[in-house]
Image 1 (cartoon, rainbow, N blue to C red):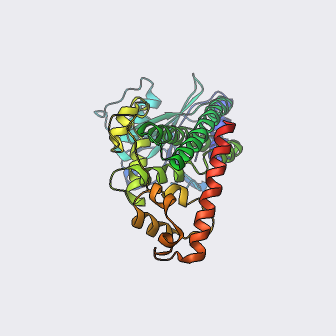
Image 2 (image 1 turned 135 degrees about the vertical axis):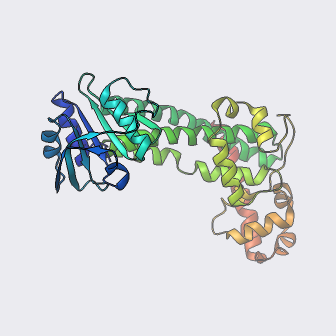
Image 3 (image 1 turned 120 degrees about the vertical axis):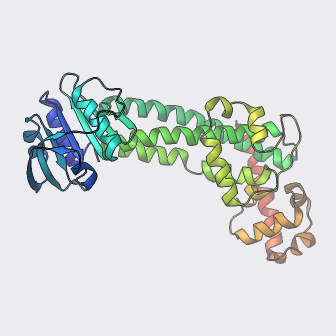
Length: 342
């Protein structure tokens, strides 16, 4: 609502650049009406210039919740004074108390400090200068690029080790660790993109390209190695829980091993179910992949299976069995070549 490129932000910037102050309520519901005193009704279409001119008066300005109309101006807000406020200025203290009392969205512009503060319920957020935000976002993107390269290397290593049947718990946890970091960084950059509005579109496109495929890869790793072979929905919940954890926990491989039920010994040998690699075979339906995993229980057994054994799985057939064997052979060669190039 207040990102660069929106009409409301244009009005706020006009007030800021003129070194003015303002208190704006973006809600005209009954809750807000109960704390209004004096002022005068307007009910005119919203325009950035009108917002700027009305801000020259001392009182608050009330906008409709959809930002289409300016409802009132020069309004005195009288929220309950017993509501706790950590602010010192009258305008900001009133905004914080009104937001807590009504749940409305309020904007306070400090004339002295030239800062825009947003309030809603218990939350306060101070808008950064777009140039500063772009700098932070670009720095976070550079970090994401480094983590993505590391993630790709670890995934390639895991693939090679799966073909060699030499996977350790640490090999699995390191892949999930990098995925969780990338997802966390994405959440941070998403906030920058949202706050930058039209100025953050290019950053959003770059982020999408950088993160593409990470979540799906991590889900398949979880389903391959986590205890009891969780279904997709359970794996998604576990990955969401992992991404929200404290960075100290994510970086602790022993804690991460316990989290996905791989134990605390990073050197312990583990065997995957084969979902991740089978999903790389072109034209192999999801139902057939599930049948193969259920039938053989491990990727090593799928890899060692003969044509006749593959043919016995529902939905495979002789032609598809040959395609699976040749496809796995190509993936193995690619994994060896990629590992030699790391």
